[in-house]
Length: 129
Image (cartoon, rainbow, N blue to C red; front, side, top):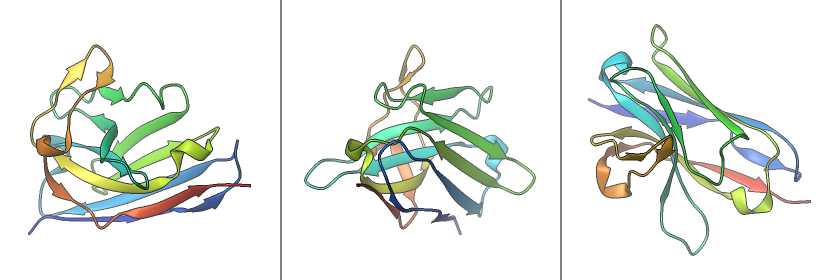
């Protein structure tokens, strides 16, 4: 049974940092494209970052490049998202996801929610002063 359990969300001031973690079970992380999506209030879910199962390559949305870093531990079956220089527009529920089909444009993540086959329960990130 596939499970994705996120932790690490919270309230942070603009310019601050947070680290999200996801514990995955029911599948082998090294054989899976895994990453993070988010959903801001009143908006659709969008891809944030992922690690490809093919070569471990990392991909990011344009809005988070240079500020967020994704990493994985294939022994512990965990994936993390380190977020720096957070902005109010980063406020959203962040979901750990197992991606069925990876779509990219260069180094930019282009997968949509329909490319995801499993979702975690989500963790709230609020960036506010």
